[in-house]
Amino acid sequence: MDYNKCASEILSAIGGKENLASAAHCATRLRLVIADNSKVKKQTLEGIDGVKGVFEASGQLQIIIGTGTVNKVYDEFIALAGVEAASKDDVKAAAAAQSPWYKRAIKTLGDIFVPIIPAIVATGLLNGLLGGLSKAFPHMADSDLFGLLNIFSNAALVFLPILIAVSAAKIFGGNTYLGAVIGMIMIHPDLVNAWSAGSGAETSTLWSWFGLWDIQNTGYQGHVIPVVIAVLVMSKLEKKLHKIVPEIIDLFVTPLVSVLVTGFLTMTIIGPIFSQIESWVLDGAKALIAIPFGIGAFIMGGVYAPTVVAGVHHMYNAIELAMIADNGQNTWMPIATAANVAQGAAALAVAFKTKQQKTKSLALPASLSAFMGITEPAIFGVNVRFVKPLVAGMIGGACGAAVASLMNVYATANGVTGIFGFLITTNCFFGYLLTFLVASAVAFILSYIMYKDPVEETAAAPAPEAGEAKQDAASVSTEGRDFDKTCVYSPLKGTAVAMADVPDETFASDVLGKGAAVDPTEGKVVAPADGEVSMMFDTHHAVGLTLDNGMEMLIHIGINTVELNGEGYTAHIADGERFTRGQTLITFDKALIESKGYKTITPVIITNPDDYAEIDKAADGSVDFLDKLISTKKA
Image (cartoon, rainbow, N blue to C red; front, side, top):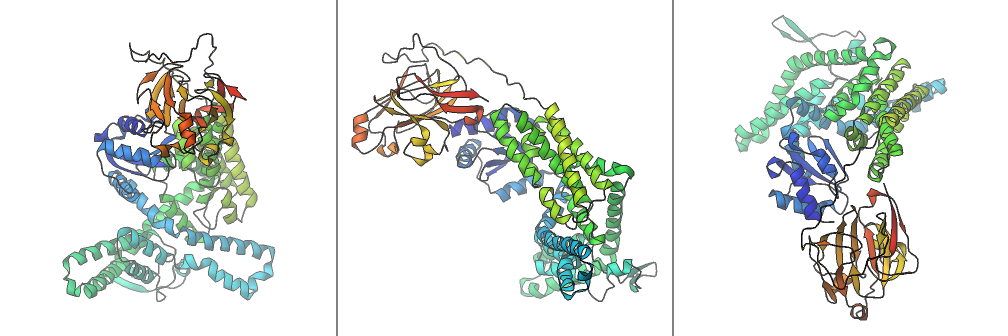
């Protein structure tokens, strides 16, 4: 692969270095923050050799390159762009800074709630299991063991404000222990438990604003938003105090003032106001889902996927946590499951119908991931790209969500959807299963009907300019040969060898691509078809070719022969030069190479195998120059 060429084409397709704000990479992807997304040519990006997929997520343009390759493309990319290498955290920060305020607010909620999901899942699973066991064995509810396990099952909900406070303090940059104190104040045992107050327990006045507004001594068990706002205020106050309080007394003054001021504001203003706002939001969500005949759930199931695309789906965490804390019934989770598995089924239909191997290899694993609850690969890698599968998934999600509403399916935790959601929907196993099946079936059928492979525009290969293709007196005659564009022709004379029999694990395992090898009887490599040199290795022991029919090829002369540092090899062509079929590319001293202990067996590899549905060794036994060596079938 020509890493510089790939990087250069990517930089051009995103609008040049002037349109690049930040760049980093992970194990498989370039992660870019773009100044103006309208200048990005997404279709051009997807067509670049080496690019396996493109999607946008969390304010980043993510370009899938592949393990072991992305770092090399990245090095060339930042050199061409003239920017410094950035970490993934740097890119996330740059992307967040460019997002609208409401997206930043919603993302912040997600960052706060996601870390505590394991605690909610653990207790939610236990709560659901205990509920199922107590129905199957009624007398179990009176046992000491049940009482002990019941403490385990609701601990996270009882102390939910403390969990949220600690997580929020980390996100807002405050002291996590001071954040925990604010959470503890809000559920202090001297306050009347919020659930008891909701059941009619007597309360008294905690604070009175001149007799105009009486604040009751009620705790904030089960509340979410008031805790987040309170810790936000505390964190900002703490950081401000650190700047203005003399260092000699900072250790004493800053924590004292932070807790005193924030605690007072929380119990008198922040708590009462934002708990009311939270109640309105929760009531609105419940009312929407409760619209008769599943209409509300149908609407939410349909629009769920677009909110994922927009990056605002993190707000659902707050709603789900509030539902669980309110009555233990998370009716939002089945809606999310319907939407998620529907997108997976839509991508699965693409995998079944497409004739493009590259699309199939991306869509199939992405669909399976969505059934497990991880939808980003399916949504961004397949469905958004082709649009119609996204629409099919939205319709399937809507239908599945309506089923969940009509059958009163709910979960006892949040953070888990898809197949694993069966573990937290113990109230209605059949209802959840039907939700899953309806969403999947509708989405798959519609996507299969609607999807069509895009028509690829093919341009005729440019004719070489006068004198561009070198004539070679030693070239092999092609007269009378019937050349088939679906085949790879042998660039050497010798004996054909299956790739699995090559004495090198890297080649034998097809990690570099698929093909066959030749055990040469003559020290000459010729061009198997017309094309261009994409990379001539400095040591001349290998050459990368891009043929006019779109095939990309690596010819590697010998095993571990890079160690010879070019000794015994002579290149007859350079990087970027065109060649014609039969033209000599490299000659090598076979006897010299073998005398130094190296095998001259030469792998001939197709390095863009995803563009082909089938790649098989065609030749058995001896091959002359330009005999058929490998047969292919276009994807």
